[in-house]
Image 1 (spheres, rainbow, N blue to C red):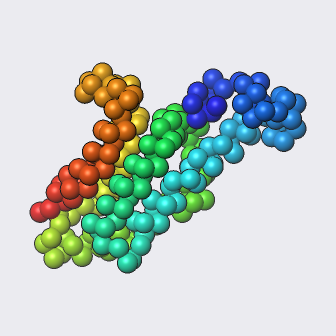
Image 2: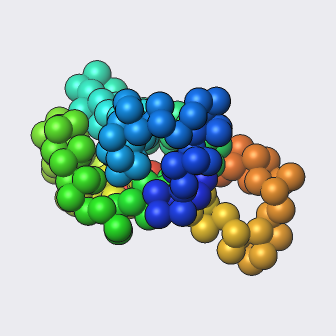
Length: 185
């Protein structure tokens, strides 16, 4: 309910109905709708952010393998949960402290290995210099934008709901090469 409608629009009775319980039970376990929203948001964030940063922090994967793995896994993840990215972004704007708290707890700043890899590749002349923060923001932005802007994409590029999965499958094949080409010197 929160993910599809956002926290502000979700009503406790609707949440209870969808869960198959009565409203009093929701209040008993969570106290308030906001406390429940906090749990839902934390679960949503923990479902995908640790995996992304785990891949990027790997010292056994090359930069190219990291990009290909993150693209494949994240597009599959978001295709199975198309409302998640818009929900997370909406909550990030309305409850920024909630996002900060979860991100800090999850150790989102584990970019040291990636930083070393990017520096080494730039020094070898195989990649242009890029800050790891810019690398991560650019990659994640390219991954989640189609899900964030889905209603606009349906109009602008003619990708209706029935063809959205095929659009994402094509993106899964094309995005790694596009992103990696932008890193070449």
